[in-house]
Structure formats: structure tokens, C-alpha cells
Image (cartoon, rainbow, N blue to C red):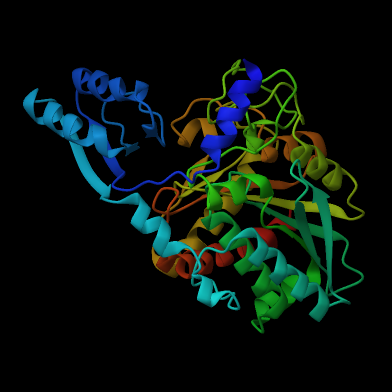
Length: 405
């Protein structure tokens, strides 16, 4: 029976999942009755609430397949439920296709599109060849034998402190690797005086895609895939949430299913999180700043995600986050909320995240995560450069101020 299941799974996974006429709705229940009505859709196949809906007057985003849209709107109107509904995206598939780099533009890497892994890897290889005395690439092998590349940029041999940028841990968050590669490009190429100063003050490490297998799968098979692609003995579950697999209060909420936030059977069960954690522990320099890039939500998250208690140097980091948010807002006017994940993410306690482990295990002065502002997980390609520009200014500010911690 298990063999048959895997054979059927292989046949099904060979066909890319499409999202024709899937809509993304922004919904807000204004009564308990409305809340119950909305949450009744959680049980339907291919319906996904991007943010959990837990209380009245809370806004959430939901991915709704076409077969449920008429039913949803009819019941919402006919039963006179007190629900605010905004159609944020009418056809998800159209946005996906518009954002992917066309085949005839394979030679370009200019942040006009979202690029597949092979384009990113080729670009990284080119950087290492062009700047062989300043750029070094280390690779961690993934479950499917791809490279998880970590790019070190060192313009000053005497630099002793590190800024580490981690991105792409959740496969479908394409804006995250796009921003990371943009920042990497600016660190290497910019003639801006502030950037020149910071690239000489620190060694910069950038890991643009820390879930390569999942990232490829999100391009080739299922745009909304979040987890890794690891197969674990004795389990029918494919992949784990890489940002719940770190050894900090691991799985204290008791996840056992194959849901989006399944943390795996034990800490560092995934080869990528295990390899990345060992890389960090073996850094020859002092890790001063660890910055994790995610989407979406317009938030800066400070450890620890399982508590509202402000621990360690929270107050000092909060001040830096405030300045980083102001630097970001000064570019495009976007406002970011600041706090622990439990305080601002509307999804309950977060266990086993990379920034929490880095903070607790390595005592890093600045360990923060960004939930990049974006249109859900399918940001239009036109937003890549504006988003990257504001994130660059924010990260530069955070790195500069973190040296004072």
C-alpha cells in the first residue's frame, strides 16, 4: 500500500499545480457568527489562510480556489454575515506567470523578474570568478543534492565581525531571495560612501536560498510550496518547515501532521538546517548581526517568538529595529511593525526558528527577522526593486548600529 501511495504521488507531482482563477481575499469578520462562518472554509481542499483567523475584527488573507468562490460570496451575502471582503488578487496564475523570468531573457539578472535557482547559482559563480580575491562561495549539499550556497564578501582582510543574511528558507517566499541577492550585489558593487564603509568594516555572508529543493519545487511544481523536500524514514510527509526545525524550544506546540509548519521529527532533522547551523558555529569571525528575510507582513521580529517577555538585550535591539524601520519607511513610505513574533504575527507562539536559535545558542548581539512587505507570497515583479531598495537601507542601518551592542 505504501509503495502504491508513493507511485501515485510521483505521478501527481509530475504535473505542475496551476492556480488558474484562484483568488486571494482579504477578509475581516465583525462578529462571532462571521468568524465561525469564515473559519468553516478551513476544511476545504486547497483553501489556505495565509494568516490564521482567530478573533473578531482581525484581518486575514485566504487563498480561495474558483470552485468555492461563488459559494463563499453567496453565503456571505445571503446569510447577511458581517464580513468585510476585498478581492486582493483575482487570478493568482496570471501574477505567477508574469513574475517568472521569460526564457528569452535567460542572460539577464537585473531584478526585473523572479529568477530560478540555476540563474541565481550562475550569477553567484560569476561573482566569485570576477572578484576571486574578495568573494568566496561555500556550499552545503541538500537532500536532493543541490547546493545551498553561502557567499562571503570580504574587502578588508582585517575585519573580525560578521553580518550574516539568510533568505529563502520558505520556498514560496520568492521576494526573500530577490532582496538578498540585490543587497549582495550592492555590497559588492556600490560606490555609495556608506556602503563602502560598511563593506570594509564587516565581512558579509549572504545565503540567498537556504531551501534550494523547496525553491525549485515552487518554480516547477507548486508555487505555494513552503517546506523543504526531505523524505524522512517511516513518514509519508514530504518536507519540513525549515524555520521550525532549529533546536530552540523545538516543537513545544506538538505538531505531528504534515501541515505547513510541520517542524520535523527532531531538531535539525533537515540536512540544510543542520548544515547551516554548523556553518554558523564554525565561523572564524565574530557573528555580530544575523538577519533572516521572510515574507509577507511588514514586520521586524525580535527574539523570542515563543514569548511576549522581553529577554536578553531586547530594549537595545528594539531601538535599532525602530531606526531600521524608519530607514525603510524613508524610501517608499512603508511602515513596519516591531515586536516578538508572538506579539505581532497573529499566529501564536513560534518555536524552533533560526533567529531564536542564533540568539540563544550563539549569543549574537543582533538577531532579527524581517517579514518583508509584499502582496502575499506572489508579489508582482514590479515590486522587486522598490522592495529591495527599502530593505537595503534598513539592513545597512541595522548592521551599522549593531556594532555598538
